Length: 381
Image 1 (cartoon, rainbow, N blue to C red):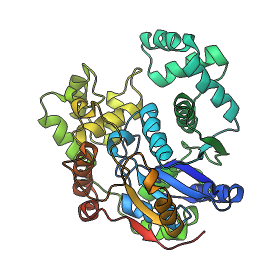
Image 2 (cartoon, helix red, strand yellow):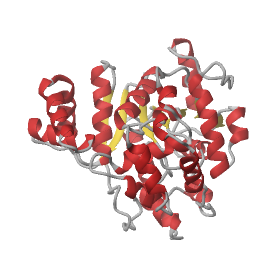
Image 3 (tube, rainbow, N blue to C red):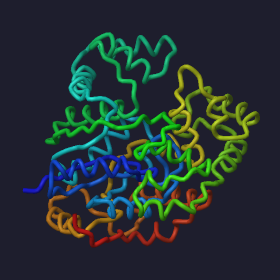
């Protein structure tokens, strides 16, 4: 029986670190099927994807992935716990037996211990609530509570996601093993010029016209080398904010924030400045960024009610991936999306709107989105 390895990814963009992860998986599980659950037009932090979902799918399969499944927008631009809940749920539907992820340190046992504390220790929620009542944000409150109970803090971004992934596996009793790989770079280091740097580092270099040829596989470089990252994101976000009477109908816009956002938009000339002007001790940079993306994409609190996975959307597969899907399709809990039916599926209707917005402010993918034909690349391992 082949191992089936799942990875939750954004590939914004795919780089040498991602290739290193796939190679490490192949070293340990030679004939494994690798399935990635991938965000599409916008990332978990609310950033625009610099390669569209179809180009990201091609990059993934050309570099060793067997199946790319889409994590719908309604789940992919939310907090780490919600993001993790639905991504792991989707991968579990596809019968993975191992989840692979990168973390900053060799500390997987500590992260597992912290996950168990969150789930089983009754004092954890009490402590988090106490810290939240002091006016700090949730990630900081979580860190402080874990420090009090475990003498360990979850501070790095990938550690926080790993914690959320492990919690989902434990809470739902998924039969999924964990394979962690130590990251070789720091997400926040924008100056590193080695062959393996973070996606954020690469985006920064692209914005500053610095060559990234040695930092991504050749097939990715071909897509990026002439890429114009200019977009209308901030321009249309500003219009949306100024033209809306009340922003509190949108997801993550808490009571009282609408006024603060409207005051901040008039003194901000970039998205970065807008986020910094809204940011407080209670709201993290990432939460503000996600919130603004929900305003841009008109994703409301009402739409977010009672959402769940309705289908499995395959964006692409290799020959081995196609064979695996044929083997399991009769045992899938949810249907593989074959017809692009926005009336039948609420989450797909929202995905269509988001893809149209992405097409308008950055790169037109409207035709491929409706065509809904998975990319097939006949590439063996």
